[in-house]
Amino acid sequence: MRLRINWFSPLRPANTAIAHYALQTVPALARRADVVVWTQRAYWPREMEQYATVRRWDGESWAALNAADATLYHIGNDVRFHGWIWDVASRHPGVMVLHDTRLHEFFAPKLLEGPEGESRYISTVRRVHGEAGVALAQRYLRGETTVEALGEPLPLTAVALERARGAIVHTGVAFEQAVACGHCSVLQLDLPYTPGPPPPPRTWDGVLKMVVFGYLGLNRRIEAVLDGIAAFPDRDRLRLDIFGQHHAPASLMRRIGELGLEEVVRLRGFVPEPDLDAALDEAHLAINLRYPTMGEASASQVRIWDRGLASVVTRTGWYAELPPDTVLFVDPENELADLHAHFRAALADPDRLAAMGRAGRGVLEESHDPAVYTGQLVAGVERMMFPPTSVATEAVAAISRIADASGVNSAVRRSIARRAAGEVCRWLSPRPA
Image (tube, one colour):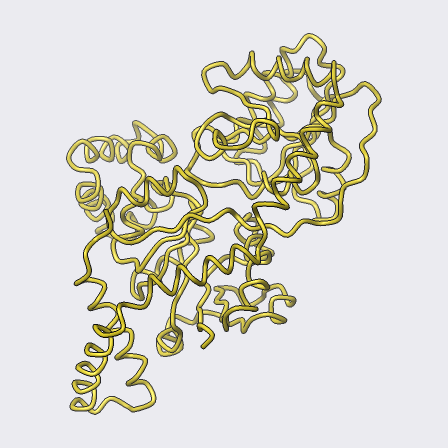
C-alpha cells in the first residue's frame, strides 16, 4: 500500500531555499506516496497541485493529519518560515526534517513569546544544555551577546527531537549532532536536486565575474568578501554581483561606498529564477562562504553545481566534506589570504575553474537524484513510523477496545488507534545508541 504523507514546509514565493527543495522533492515523492502539502498561506505554486493535495493549515484539521501514515515537518533556522510548522509539530509528533541543526536562532524567539517567555526559555536551555548553558542564555537576555553567537554553544537541537518519531538530515555533521541527542532514529540523505539543461560554455575576457546569492545572513561573510576584494591589488579585474536579501542592506551599501567598490560590486536584490540562472551561467566563480555553519547542507551549492560553476566555500561542517575537485576551500582563520590566493589563481588559470564546474555538475548528477532521495526517504519513514507488527497489532486492538467503550466515532477510531499504538510502542522501544 502507498504511504499517506503530510508535508509541512515553506512554499514559493517564500524566499527560502527550503521552498525550492519542496518543488524539487514533492514531484518525485508523489510517485511513491499520496502527499498532502500543508501551507500557512492562502496562495502557493499551482504546479504543486499536479503532484499533491495542497491545503492551508487552519489550526484545527487534526483529524486530517491523523488520517495519514506519517507527517514530515521541515524545520530551518528562520522563525518567519518555520514557526507555524513547529506550532503544529509540538502538538502532533512526526518526522523532523532538519535543514539546520543549530536552532537557537529559531527557538529563542519562539520560547520567548508571551508573558512567561523568559522563564520558559531559561528552563528549556537548562533542560537541554545545563547550568553552563543557562549562564550563556542569561547573557543573551541582558543584551550581552547575540542570538546568532549562541548557535554553536546552545544549538537547542534536542528541543526539535524530544517528541519526534524520527529525523532526516542532509549532512554528516548534522547526523552526528542529531544522533547525540538520543531521542529518535536518524537518517542521513543527500540533498535532492533535479539538474537543468547543461550550462553553455563560459567566455573569458580577463575579468573574473563572481556571484553571491540567497538569504545573506551574518554567517555568509559578505562583509569579509568585500574587504577581500577592496584589498586585492588587481581588484579592477574583479566583478561581484550580489543577489538576494542581505540582513542589513543599507549598511552593506554604505560599506561598498566606503571601500570605493561602486564599479566592482553590484547589488541586484531578488530576481526571477531564469534571471538568476542566466547570471550563474555568465559567472566564473560563486562565493558560498558559511561561518559559522548552522549544520546545514547548501541548496545554493547544489544549484551552483547544476550550472557547472566553480565555487569558494568555508572549510567547515558539510562544506568540508565536499570533493576537493569541485570547490575551493577557505579556512576561517585565514580568510583574507585564502580569498586572495583563489582570486590570483582564477585570473591566472580560468580553465581550472571550468574543470571544477564540470566536476561539480558530475557530483550533482550522480549523488543528488530526487528519485533516489525519495525512495530512501519513504523506506526510512516506514521504519520510523511503524513498530514491529506483533506489538503493534496487540496495541491497536487494546486501544480500539478502549475507543469502542468510550463511544468514539468509527470513522476516526482506526486512525486514532493506529497513531496511539505507534506512540506507545515508540516510547517502549529502546533508544538508539
